Image 1: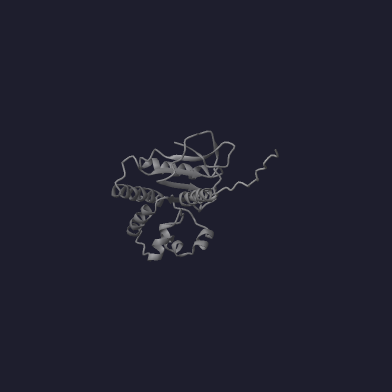
Image 2 (image 1 turned 90 degrees about the vertical axis):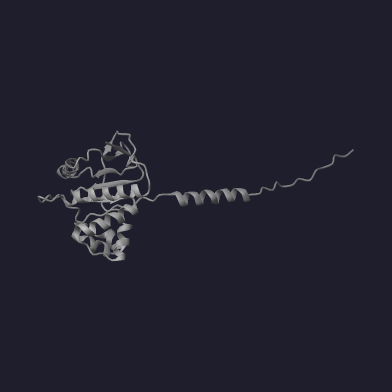
Length: 220
Protein backbone atom coordinates (compact mmCIF):
# COMPACT_ATOMS: atom_id res chain seq x y z
CA UNK A 1 0.00 0.00 0.00
CA UNK A 2 1.46 3.36 -1.00
CA UNK A 3 2.29 5.90 1.73
CA UNK A 4 0.02 8.87 2.02
CA UNK A 5 2.05 12.02 1.75
CA UNK A 6 0.96 14.86 4.05
CA UNK A 7 1.17 18.20 2.37
CA UNK A 8 3.69 20.53 3.99
CA UNK A 9 2.33 23.85 5.20
CA UNK A 10 4.31 26.85 6.30
CA UNK A 11 3.83 27.91 9.89
CA UNK A 12 2.06 31.22 10.30
CA UNK A 13 3.29 33.38 13.17
CA UNK A 14 1.09 36.20 14.41
CA UNK A 15 3.44 39.14 15.13
CA UNK A 16 0.71 41.48 16.35
CA UNK A 17 1.38 40.89 20.03
CA UNK A 18 5.14 41.33 19.61
CA UNK A 19 4.66 44.62 17.75
CA UNK A 20 2.36 45.84 20.53
CA UNK A 21 4.98 45.01 23.15
CA UNK A 22 7.73 46.70 21.14
CA UNK A 23 5.75 49.93 20.79
CA UNK A 24 4.78 49.86 24.47
CA UNK A 25 8.45 49.56 25.44
CA UNK A 26 9.41 52.35 23.04
CA UNK A 27 6.70 54.61 24.47
CA UNK A 28 7.85 53.82 28.01
CA UNK A 29 11.47 54.75 27.31
CA UNK A 30 10.47 57.96 25.50
CA UNK A 31 8.27 59.12 28.39
CA UNK A 32 10.69 58.19 31.18
CA UNK A 33 14.00 59.22 29.65
CA UNK A 34 15.61 62.18 31.41
CA UNK A 35 17.81 64.11 29.01
CA UNK A 36 21.10 65.48 30.19
CA UNK A 37 20.76 69.26 30.71
CA UNK A 38 22.85 71.65 28.68
CA UNK A 39 25.94 72.72 30.61
CA UNK A 40 26.68 76.42 30.76
CA UNK A 41 30.39 75.72 31.32
CA UNK A 42 32.64 73.03 29.87
CA UNK A 43 34.08 71.17 32.85
CA UNK A 44 36.45 68.21 32.87
CA UNK A 45 36.07 66.60 36.28
CA UNK A 46 38.88 64.77 38.13
CA UNK A 47 38.91 61.01 38.70
CA UNK A 48 38.27 59.40 42.06
CA UNK A 49 37.78 55.98 43.63
CA UNK A 50 34.71 57.16 45.59
CA UNK A 51 31.57 55.12 45.04
CA UNK A 52 28.78 57.28 46.51
CA UNK A 53 26.15 57.95 43.86
CA UNK A 54 24.96 61.50 43.34
CA UNK A 55 21.18 61.95 43.89
CA UNK A 56 19.15 62.16 40.69
CA UNK A 57 16.87 65.03 41.74
CA UNK A 58 16.50 68.03 44.05
CA UNK A 59 20.08 69.23 43.55
CA UNK A 60 21.75 72.63 43.71
CA UNK A 61 24.69 72.26 41.33
CA UNK A 62 27.63 74.65 41.74
CA UNK A 63 30.06 74.54 38.82
CA UNK A 64 33.59 75.98 38.72
CA UNK A 65 35.32 76.01 35.35
CA UNK A 66 39.06 76.00 34.74
CA UNK A 67 39.12 79.82 34.74
CA UNK A 68 37.68 79.90 38.24
CA UNK A 69 34.27 81.20 37.12
CA UNK A 70 31.28 80.04 39.14
CA UNK A 71 27.93 78.89 37.71
CA UNK A 72 24.82 77.60 39.45
CA UNK A 73 21.80 75.53 38.51
CA UNK A 74 18.69 74.02 40.10
CA UNK A 75 16.87 71.02 38.62
CA UNK A 76 13.37 71.94 39.91
CA UNK A 77 11.34 74.47 37.89
CA UNK A 78 9.07 75.42 40.80
CA UNK A 79 12.13 76.27 42.88
CA UNK A 80 13.47 78.39 40.01
CA UNK A 81 10.28 80.44 39.85
CA UNK A 82 10.18 80.93 43.62
CA UNK A 83 13.86 81.93 43.52
CA UNK A 84 13.21 84.44 40.75
CA UNK A 85 10.55 86.17 42.86
CA UNK A 86 13.11 86.58 45.63
CA UNK A 87 15.79 87.82 43.20
CA UNK A 88 13.43 90.42 41.75
CA UNK A 89 12.79 91.76 45.24
CA UNK A 90 16.39 91.57 46.46
CA UNK A 91 18.02 93.10 43.36
CA UNK A 92 15.10 95.22 42.07
CA UNK A 93 14.88 93.32 38.79
CA UNK A 94 12.10 94.15 36.33
CA UNK A 95 11.42 91.09 34.19
CA UNK A 96 8.87 90.42 31.47
CA UNK A 97 6.76 87.23 31.36
CA UNK A 98 9.02 85.98 28.55
CA UNK A 99 12.13 86.52 30.69
CA UNK A 100 10.45 84.78 33.62
CA UNK A 101 9.65 81.77 31.46
CA UNK A 102 13.23 81.73 30.16
CA UNK A 103 14.52 81.54 33.75
CA UNK A 104 12.07 78.71 34.51
CA UNK A 105 13.69 76.67 31.71
CA UNK A 106 17.26 77.70 32.53
CA UNK A 107 19.37 74.73 33.63
CA UNK A 108 22.24 76.89 34.91
CA UNK A 109 23.59 80.43 34.70
CA UNK A 110 26.66 82.42 35.70
CA UNK A 111 26.27 86.19 35.48
CA UNK A 112 26.14 89.02 38.02
CA UNK A 113 22.54 89.73 39.03
CA UNK A 114 22.54 93.08 37.24
CA UNK A 115 23.18 91.24 33.95
CA UNK A 116 20.50 88.57 34.47
CA UNK A 117 17.71 90.42 32.55
CA UNK A 118 20.00 90.76 29.52
CA UNK A 119 20.84 87.04 29.62
CA UNK A 120 17.16 86.09 29.83
CA UNK A 121 16.31 88.33 26.86
CA UNK A 122 18.55 86.28 24.54
CA UNK A 123 17.31 83.47 22.36
CA UNK A 124 18.23 79.93 23.41
CA UNK A 125 20.94 79.71 20.75
CA UNK A 126 22.45 83.09 21.63
CA UNK A 127 22.35 82.26 25.33
CA UNK A 128 24.15 78.95 24.80
CA UNK A 129 26.92 80.73 22.87
CA UNK A 130 27.18 83.73 25.20
CA UNK A 131 30.31 84.09 27.32
CA UNK A 132 29.00 84.34 30.88
CA UNK A 133 31.26 86.09 33.38
CA UNK A 134 30.42 83.87 36.34
CA UNK A 135 28.68 84.61 39.64
CA UNK A 136 30.61 86.97 41.88
CA UNK A 137 32.40 85.59 44.95
CA UNK A 138 33.45 89.06 46.04
CA UNK A 139 32.42 89.96 49.59
CA UNK A 140 31.74 93.65 50.19
CA UNK A 141 31.12 94.17 53.95
CA UNK A 142 28.60 94.36 55.49
CA UNK A 143 27.00 92.45 52.62
CA UNK A 144 27.83 88.90 51.59
CA UNK A 145 28.75 87.82 48.07
CA UNK A 146 26.14 87.35 45.35
CA UNK A 147 27.16 83.69 45.36
CA UNK A 148 26.09 83.21 48.99
CA UNK A 149 22.97 85.30 48.39
CA UNK A 150 21.99 82.84 45.69
CA UNK A 151 22.78 79.76 47.78
CA UNK A 152 20.63 81.00 50.65
CA UNK A 153 17.76 82.15 48.43
CA UNK A 154 17.77 78.86 46.49
CA UNK A 155 17.65 76.82 49.70
CA UNK A 156 14.86 78.99 51.12
CA UNK A 157 12.88 78.70 47.88
CA UNK A 158 13.29 74.93 47.75
CA UNK A 159 12.27 74.54 51.40
CA UNK A 160 9.11 76.59 50.79
CA UNK A 161 8.26 74.38 47.80
CA UNK A 162 8.93 71.23 49.84
CA UNK A 163 6.57 72.38 52.60
CA UNK A 164 3.85 73.49 50.15
CA UNK A 165 3.98 70.10 48.37
CA UNK A 166 3.88 68.18 51.66
CA UNK A 167 7.18 66.38 51.10
CA UNK A 168 8.97 64.90 54.15
CA UNK A 169 11.78 66.82 55.94
CA UNK A 170 14.26 64.24 54.66
CA UNK A 171 13.62 65.41 51.09
CA UNK A 172 15.85 68.46 51.41
CA UNK A 173 17.93 69.94 48.62
CA UNK A 174 21.41 68.45 48.18
CA UNK A 175 24.37 70.66 47.23
CA UNK A 176 26.93 69.39 44.72
CA UNK A 177 30.15 71.07 43.58
CA UNK A 178 31.44 70.22 40.12
CA UNK A 179 34.90 71.71 39.61
CA UNK A 180 37.19 71.35 36.61
CA UNK A 181 40.32 69.34 37.35
CA UNK A 182 42.37 72.32 36.13
CA UNK A 183 40.36 74.88 38.10
CA UNK A 184 42.22 77.38 40.23
CA UNK A 185 42.42 75.97 43.75
CA UNK A 186 41.72 79.37 45.32
CA UNK A 187 38.36 79.68 43.53
CA UNK A 188 37.20 76.22 44.64
CA UNK A 189 38.49 76.84 48.16
CA UNK A 190 36.62 80.17 48.32
CA UNK A 191 33.37 78.47 47.29
CA UNK A 192 33.77 75.89 50.06
CA UNK A 193 34.88 78.50 52.60
CA UNK A 194 31.84 80.70 51.97
CA UNK A 195 29.53 77.69 52.29
CA UNK A 196 31.12 76.70 55.58
CA UNK A 197 30.89 80.25 56.94
CA UNK A 198 27.10 79.87 56.66
CA UNK A 199 27.19 76.45 58.35
CA UNK A 200 26.73 74.56 55.08
CA UNK A 201 29.11 71.72 55.80
CA UNK A 202 27.52 68.86 53.88
CA UNK A 203 27.88 68.77 50.10
CA UNK A 204 29.00 66.46 47.31
CA UNK A 205 32.16 66.87 45.25
CA UNK A 206 31.47 65.42 41.81
CA UNK A 207 34.18 63.25 40.29
CA UNK A 208 34.34 60.56 37.65
CA UNK A 209 35.01 56.90 38.26
CA UNK A 210 38.71 56.28 37.76
CA UNK A 211 39.26 55.12 34.18
CA UNK A 212 35.86 56.40 33.08
CA UNK A 213 34.66 59.68 31.60
CA UNK A 214 31.29 59.51 33.36
CA UNK A 215 30.41 61.69 36.35
CA UNK A 216 29.18 58.68 38.25
CA UNK A 217 30.64 59.13 41.69
CA UNK A 218 30.58 61.72 44.42
CA UNK A 219 32.04 62.17 47.86
CA UNK A 220 31.00 64.19 50.88
